[in-house]
Length: 184
Length: 204
Image (spheres, rainbow over the protein chains, first blue to last red):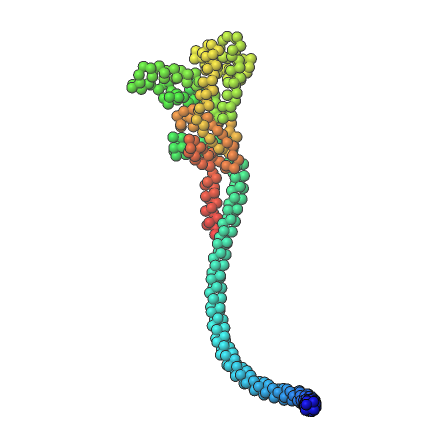
């Protein structure tokens, strides 16, 4: 009876050992596989990095080319536009120049007319003022002459008139006053 | 009423304050008895004042006269009897005393101090109210001419006037007369200026 148990134990141990070895083998195998996977991954990452670099460089080149192309095309468009604008501007300037020239000519003509009118008006006014001034001045001179002559006459006549003549003049003044009813 | 003096200048009859004519003017038939009495009293006073008034010709004379009257008023109420000329002899030697003497001879001067004072005050008031005629002339008039002028103007107006004589050396001859808001210029200035104006205008 003991023997089968021992045999069973033995076989069980053997099976266990075999299982353990199998497990050990599996673990080692997996480990190797993992290590291999890691190596592949590192390789892949390096490759990816390289590819990214190349791709980036390529994109830059393409972008640069495209940009240059766009800029070149835009420059051409811009040149064309500017040329067209300049031509329009030139036409406009030319047209405006003619208008301004006409306007200036018209203004000059009006200015000339206004100036002539103004000058004529001023001349008339100045002549009038001059005439008035002359009249006033002459009037003042006349008045001054009259005052001088009157003063001289007063002096001369005053001295020349005797007392009796003065009295006669006063009597005549009285008679005139009576006639003019000053006393009534 | 004195009608003449040594200078030969006739005197002017005075109007009474009531606007009536002088004493020689007959009283109007429509007047009643009291009016007659009042007019007679006023005329008597006017007659008494006439010699005094006729001695004044211009405003200077009027001022001198009023000064004399003031002096004479001081001679009253000094326990001295008699007429004003006697009482005032110690206070003034002016010729006005002779006029008082003349008036006293006619009996028109009152006798008592109080009445004499009233007489003097009335006299001063009367002469102050005399109408004034302003006359501007070019020369200093002689006294004779002034009297004559006063006489003529008073006669023209019909009442005694006082002349306010202004000497204006800028007048050439004649006179400027102003009376009662009216004025007239009767000098040689006007014709002379006219002649000068014409002369200047014609020479243009």
